[in-house]
Amino acid sequence: MPTIFAKIINREIPAHIVYEDDLVIAFLDISQATKGHTLVVSKELSKDIFELKPETASHLFMVAQKLSVAIQKAFHVSGLNILSNNGETAGQSVFHFHIHLIPRYAKGDLSFQLPNNMGSVTFDEYKERAQKIKEALS
Ligand code: DGP
Image 1 (tube, protein in one colour):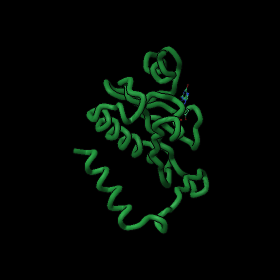
Image 2 (cartoon, helix red, strand yellow):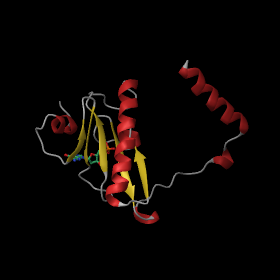
Image 3 (cartoon, helix red, strand yellow):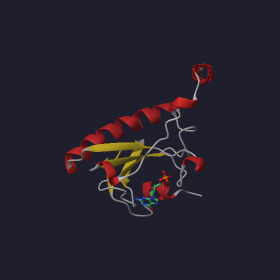
Image 4 (cartoon, protein in one colour):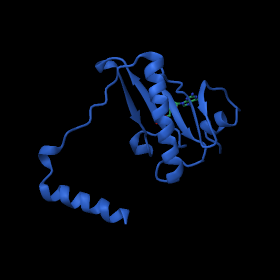
């Protein structure tokens, strides 16, 4: 079944599109978590970052950077969060790869408080975690 974003790409449902090329499309997120909240979406039908082609990821991030600068200019933002939820566990609700550009106007306008577990992770655990990622890359 086509995702809601595929329907936007195919112009089956409307959206406030701010950018489009062969690989990506960007439009205002309907929720407008803050003013100018924008989604950058792959046209490729990958459900998440785990499926995404590296070439698409690279292009998409370049577009995200350009759009961030445009959003900053348009709304005089004082900050911007880039967020991508991948998988239901991570809070993804539309299973079509996308990243959120969320402009920030004040420190308290959103809460993104990551826990800090530094005190409970040993040196050997850091070492083992880093080693696992490095091995998985090869
Ligand atoms: P996520 O939960 O990370 O998968 O984000 C999905 C986002 O998609 C959520 O912030 C709301 C947005 N969204 C859902 N349906 C529509 C729609 O029909 N139009 C637009 N513009 N955004 C939508």
